[in-house]
Length: 107
Image (tube, rainbow, N blue to C red; front, side):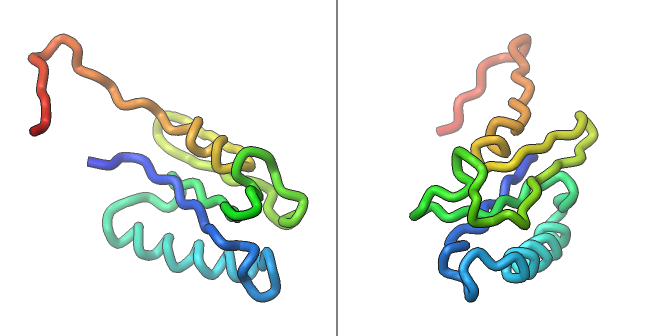
């Protein structure tokens, strides 16, 4: 199954007012409670406010969201932190591959 999550809160340019910290926190709280119910630890999930249309916080930190100090993830393998979506994706730990076992192919 899926072991790691990254949550990109998109369309931050469409909030009222644009790039609203309170709207991001509201969504983060709501999604955190949902992912906790289905068995994930919200402290191990990176939440990143982004605007895909304008490219905010996708590859480089956005000047339009000065309130966002970055995300941090606390997991048993260690901590990770960053400011952008690409940082969060790069922080995903690759799964272990049991190379000593027979090959399995899903059909």
